[in-house]
Length: 163
Image (cartoon, rainbow, N blue to C red; front, side):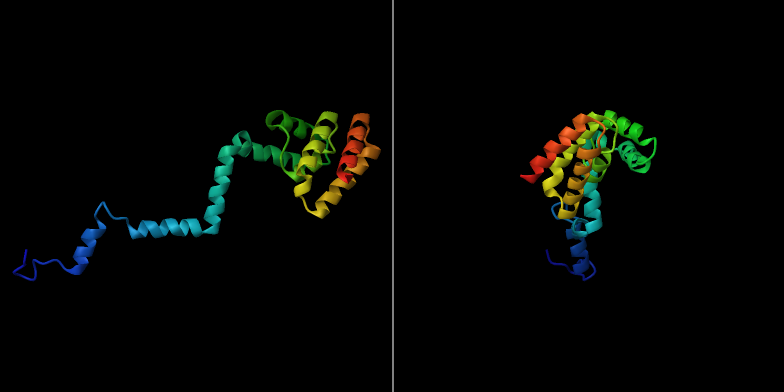
Protein backbone atom coordinates (compact mmCIF):
# COMPACT_ATOMS: atom_id res chain seq x y z
CA UNK A 1 0.00 0.00 0.00
CA UNK A 2 1.70 3.17 -1.15
CA UNK A 3 1.69 6.21 1.10
CA UNK A 4 0.69 9.57 -0.31
CA UNK A 5 2.02 11.69 2.41
CA UNK A 6 5.44 11.26 4.00
CA UNK A 7 3.96 11.84 7.43
CA UNK A 8 1.81 8.76 7.11
CA UNK A 9 4.72 6.50 6.36
CA UNK A 10 6.52 5.24 9.53
CA UNK A 11 10.21 5.94 9.90
CA UNK A 12 12.73 3.14 10.17
CA UNK A 13 13.02 3.85 13.86
CA UNK A 14 9.27 3.31 14.33
CA UNK A 15 9.40 0.13 12.26
CA UNK A 16 12.21 -1.22 14.45
CA UNK A 17 10.26 -0.35 17.60
CA UNK A 18 7.24 -2.25 16.31
CA UNK A 19 9.44 -5.26 15.57
CA UNK A 20 10.90 -5.22 19.10
CA UNK A 21 7.42 -5.29 20.60
CA UNK A 22 6.46 -8.37 18.68
CA UNK A 23 5.86 -11.40 20.92
CA UNK A 24 7.74 -13.56 18.42
CA UNK A 25 11.09 -11.89 18.99
CA UNK A 26 13.30 -11.90 22.04
CA UNK A 27 14.47 -8.78 23.69
CA UNK A 28 18.17 -8.22 23.17
CA UNK A 29 18.37 -6.37 26.46
CA UNK A 30 17.15 -9.39 28.47
CA UNK A 31 19.51 -11.67 26.62
CA UNK A 32 22.55 -9.58 27.40
CA UNK A 33 21.63 -9.23 31.09
CA UNK A 34 21.31 -13.00 31.39
CA UNK A 35 24.64 -13.50 29.65
CA UNK A 36 26.29 -10.98 31.95
CA UNK A 37 24.87 -12.71 35.01
CA UNK A 38 26.19 -16.08 33.87
CA UNK A 39 29.61 -14.65 33.08
CA UNK A 40 29.89 -12.75 36.36
CA UNK A 41 32.02 -14.98 38.58
CA UNK A 42 30.68 -13.63 41.87
CA UNK A 43 27.05 -14.13 40.84
CA UNK A 44 27.77 -17.61 39.57
CA UNK A 45 29.50 -18.63 42.83
CA UNK A 46 26.67 -17.18 44.88
CA UNK A 47 24.13 -19.07 42.81
CA UNK A 48 26.04 -22.34 43.21
CA UNK A 49 26.28 -21.85 46.98
CA UNK A 50 22.53 -21.37 47.18
CA UNK A 51 21.97 -24.53 45.14
CA UNK A 52 24.33 -26.49 47.42
CA UNK A 53 22.45 -25.24 50.48
CA UNK A 54 19.20 -26.36 48.93
CA UNK A 55 20.49 -29.90 48.50
CA UNK A 56 22.36 -29.97 51.83
CA UNK A 57 19.13 -30.15 53.84
CA UNK A 58 19.71 -29.47 57.53
CA UNK A 59 23.40 -28.82 56.97
CA UNK A 60 22.58 -25.90 54.69
CA UNK A 61 20.90 -23.81 57.37
CA UNK A 62 22.18 -20.88 59.41
CA UNK A 63 21.75 -22.92 62.60
CA UNK A 64 24.17 -25.49 61.22
CA UNK A 65 26.75 -22.80 60.50
CA UNK A 66 26.37 -21.46 64.05
CA UNK A 67 26.77 -24.93 65.57
CA UNK A 68 29.89 -25.54 63.49
CA UNK A 69 31.31 -22.17 64.54
CA UNK A 70 30.56 -23.07 68.17
CA UNK A 71 32.81 -26.14 67.84
CA UNK A 72 35.70 -24.10 66.45
CA UNK A 73 35.32 -21.29 68.99
CA UNK A 74 35.06 -23.63 71.98
CA UNK A 75 38.06 -25.78 71.04
CA UNK A 76 40.41 -25.99 74.01
CA UNK A 77 37.74 -24.96 76.53
CA UNK A 78 35.37 -26.84 78.82
CA UNK A 79 32.49 -26.21 76.40
CA UNK A 80 34.12 -28.10 73.52
CA UNK A 81 32.82 -31.57 74.39
CA UNK A 82 29.25 -30.33 74.80
CA UNK A 83 29.38 -28.36 71.54
CA UNK A 84 30.58 -31.44 69.66
CA UNK A 85 27.97 -33.71 71.27
CA UNK A 86 25.18 -31.27 70.41
CA UNK A 87 26.39 -30.93 66.83
CA UNK A 88 26.77 -34.68 66.26
CA UNK A 89 23.37 -35.35 67.83
CA UNK A 90 21.66 -32.80 65.57
CA UNK A 91 23.60 -33.08 62.28
CA UNK A 92 25.81 -36.15 62.44
CA UNK A 93 29.54 -35.96 61.79
CA UNK A 94 30.82 -32.84 60.02
CA UNK A 95 32.17 -33.24 56.52
CA UNK A 96 35.00 -30.72 56.51
CA UNK A 97 38.59 -31.68 57.24
CA UNK A 98 39.39 -29.02 59.84
CA UNK A 99 36.39 -29.79 62.05
CA UNK A 100 37.01 -33.54 61.85
CA UNK A 101 40.60 -32.98 62.98
CA UNK A 102 39.27 -31.08 66.01
CA UNK A 103 36.93 -33.97 66.82
CA UNK A 104 39.95 -36.20 67.41
CA UNK A 105 40.40 -34.40 70.76
CA UNK A 106 36.90 -35.23 72.00
CA UNK A 107 36.34 -37.36 75.12
CA UNK A 108 33.83 -39.79 73.56
CA UNK A 109 35.57 -42.82 72.02
CA UNK A 110 32.79 -43.40 69.52
CA UNK A 111 33.00 -39.87 68.11
CA UNK A 112 36.80 -40.02 67.88
CA UNK A 113 36.74 -43.37 66.05
CA UNK A 114 34.06 -42.18 63.63
CA UNK A 115 36.05 -39.00 62.98
CA UNK A 116 39.17 -41.07 62.23
CA UNK A 117 37.26 -43.15 59.69
CA UNK A 118 35.79 -40.04 58.05
CA UNK A 119 39.25 -38.46 57.86
CA UNK A 120 40.63 -41.67 56.36
CA UNK A 121 38.06 -41.39 53.55
CA UNK A 122 39.05 -37.77 52.81
CA UNK A 123 42.80 -38.40 53.26
CA UNK A 124 43.68 -39.20 49.59
CA UNK A 125 42.24 -35.91 48.34
CA UNK A 126 44.37 -33.77 50.68
CA UNK A 127 47.80 -32.31 50.05
CA UNK A 128 51.04 -33.71 51.51
CA UNK A 129 51.16 -31.18 54.37
CA UNK A 130 47.64 -32.01 55.56
CA UNK A 131 48.30 -35.74 55.16
CA UNK A 132 51.46 -35.51 57.26
CA UNK A 133 49.62 -33.53 59.94
CA UNK A 134 46.90 -36.18 60.06
CA UNK A 135 49.42 -39.01 60.35
CA UNK A 136 51.20 -37.14 63.16
CA UNK A 137 47.92 -36.64 65.00
CA UNK A 138 47.07 -40.34 64.66
CA UNK A 139 50.53 -41.32 65.94
CA UNK A 140 50.01 -39.13 69.00
CA UNK A 141 46.58 -40.66 69.59
CA UNK A 142 48.00 -44.18 69.27
CA UNK A 143 50.46 -43.42 72.08
CA UNK A 144 48.60 -41.08 74.42
CA UNK A 145 44.85 -41.79 74.15
CA UNK A 146 43.27 -42.78 77.45
CA UNK A 147 40.99 -45.27 75.74
CA UNK A 148 42.40 -48.58 74.56
CA UNK A 149 39.78 -48.62 71.80
CA UNK A 150 41.03 -45.31 70.38
CA UNK A 151 44.66 -46.44 70.63
CA UNK A 152 43.87 -49.67 68.81
CA UNK A 153 41.85 -47.88 66.11
CA UNK A 154 44.72 -45.40 65.61
CA UNK A 155 47.25 -48.21 65.23
CA UNK A 156 45.07 -49.99 62.66
CA UNK A 157 44.61 -46.72 60.77
CA UNK A 158 48.37 -46.09 60.71
CA UNK A 159 48.94 -49.56 59.28
CA UNK A 160 46.33 -48.98 56.57
CA UNK A 161 47.81 -45.62 55.60
CA UNK A 162 51.34 -47.01 55.31
CA UNK A 163 50.32 -49.57 52.71
